[in-house]
Amino acid sequence: MIRLARSSNPKHLPLLLALTLASAACGAAGDSEPALDESAELAGEQTAALTVNFDPRKSLFITDFDVVDTFSLKDVLDQLSDGHALDMFRQMFATQLAEGAEGAGAGPNCTGTINGWPEQCPRLEGLEATRDPFADPTSDESYKAITLSNRFDLAPADGANCGEYRINFARRSGNGQAGGLTRLFIAFEARLANPTPSLGLAGCRPVLDFWRGLSSVGPAVRASRLRQFYFDGLPGFRPVIDKNQFGALPGPQGGQIRVNQFLFIQAEIGDWSAREYRLIPQLAGQVPLLVPTFNKDVPARPLFNPTPAEARAVQFQEQYFPEQVERLALQDINTMNYAAPVPDDFNSGDSHMAGAFKPMVELFNDYGEELGTGPSALRTRIQQKLTALGSSLTPNQIVERATSLSCGGCHNISQDKPKASLGFPTAFPRSLGFNQVSEDLIPIPNDSARQRYQTSPLVDASLPYRAQIMRDFLAPVRGFERDAGWTSSQSQVSLNTSVKTEGTSSLRVVPTRGWSEIVSIPTSVVGSGVIGPALKLDIRLPTQQPNPHFRGHVGVLISIPSASISDHYLGQVSLDSAPLGQFTTVSIPLPAKVQRVLRYGVADVVLKVQLNVAANTNPYYLDNIRF
Image (cartoon, rainbow, N blue to C red):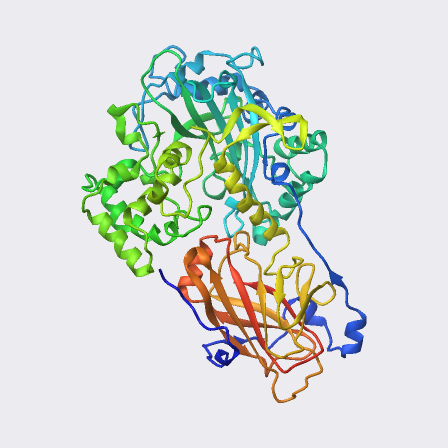
C-alpha cells in the first residue's frame, strides 16, 4: 500500500517546490477592495453559520407512496410520444419478439445480437407487446411508480449536463412476489441538459436548490413540485420527461431507459435480464422508437476470457482494462469505478445474473468466473498495476469489483460473494434479491400513518455518499461555506460573510500563536468542476504586520484515505510579496497521481492549510480553494 506522507511539522515548511504567487488581487471583491486599517475592517465584519440540511428520503431518493403514486407510466409515455403511450409501450417490448411473432409489429424485433454480442431472443417479456397495461390501472398487468431519484452525483466535471433524474415503475404482478417470477421494472433515466454549459456545474445550481427545498414541504406540495420538474421543467431547463434526454442526442444528453425483468409467465427457461433502450424521435406524426442498445459500462463477459478469441477482447485486455485498475482499487465502494467510460464496442447488450440459462452463459455477468484462477496475460497486467500502486489487492479482487459494477453484479451476483472476494472491509451490500426497490410498502419510520416502498441495503449504503455530494456542492467546504467545515488547534477560525472572493463566506483566521494548521472535514470533489494542474487558494493578509520583513508562508497537505494518500505535502508559497489588505491567489502544483485521483470523484479529501506567519491578533482570510 502506498503511503505518500510528509511531516506536518513547521520545520518542514522551507521545503520549497516550484511554486507561483499571483501578483494581482483575485476575485470581484479583491479587485476593487482598497486596503483597510484593522479597526474599519473589524467594524464591518459579519459572521456566518451556514448549514445545508435536507432529508435524503425527500431530496435524493423518494419512495413515499403518496408522492410517487402521483406519477403514471401512461403520463410518461404520452409525453414522450405525443399521446401514443400504448403504441410506444408495445413497440418497446416487441423488440424482444422474433420477426413475425404475434405482437411483433413492424419492428424492430430481436435478432439474437445487440452491439455485436449475443442476446437471448425471443424472451417472454416480449408478450407485453400484446397487452394493454393502461386498460385497468389496478390489474396485475398495469404499472406503478415506486421511485423518483436525483443523481446529480453522475454529472460530469465540465457541467455538460446536470446528472440524471429518474423514475422507476414496477409491474403490479410483483406485489407480494419478493423472490417470485412475475416481476418487471422500467426505469426512465434522463440526463438533464445544462442550459448554460458555459457556467460549468454552476449552471446546475437551480436544480440542486429545487431538490434541497423538497425536504421543507409536506408530501402533497412535494409531489406537485416534482410533477412540475419532471413534466414542465424548471425555468430555463427542459422537463425531465423530454424525448431528447433519453439517448436521442449523442454526447452529454445521452440518457437511457432500462428494464429489469424476470417475467416468467409461460415457461421455465431464461433468467433475470437487464436491458437498455434509447429513444429515437421520428418524423412528425410518427411514434418515437425505443431501440435496444448496449448496457453502458457493462463489458461483455467474453472480454475477460484468459485466452481472448477476438480482436475486441485483445484490445480490452491489453489497452483498456489495465488502465482502470487504479480507480477500481479505491477503498470506497461509492467511488470505486472505471477511470474512463467503457468504450461502446465493449459493452454488452443483454446482462444476466442468475445464470440459469446455461446455454448462454456468456450473458452471465460473473467476470471472475470467466477469468478463472489460472495464469493469464490479463492477470499479469493487473498485478503489475497493483504492484506499482503498492496495493495489497489481488487481480481476482479487481475483476470481482468490475463484476459488481455490471447490471448482474450490482443486482445479485456480488452480494453472494464472500466478503474477502472484493477486498473491501465489509461485504458488498445486498439488494432485495434481484432489485433495489421492492413493489411492497412498509411504514415510514416516525410517521406510521404513511408508507413507502422498501429499499435495499445497497441503496441505503449509497445515500450518505450522494447526500455528501449534494451538500458539498451547495455549501462547499473548499469554498469555506460550511459551518464547522474547518478547525484549528492553534488559531481562532470562523466564517465571515463580508470579506470574501466568492460564494457566501470566507474563513477568518487569527494566528495568535503564529504557525497554525487549519484542517478541513472530509469533502468530495464531485461537482467541483474540471481538475486542473494546481491547487489555488485566495488569501488576504492584514495590513498590520508585526514583522515588516517577514510576511510568512502558506502551505498545503492533502489526504485521500480511499487512495492510500496520507498527509501528502504539496508545497508552500512565500507571502513576502503578497499585497496587504486585499486578496491574492497562491498556486501550488498538484502531482500527477493526485490529479488523477481527484478526477475519480473521490469524496474523502482532507486538506490542511499551514499558515506560517508571525503571531498576529489581526485576521487573515482564506477563500476559494480550487483545483
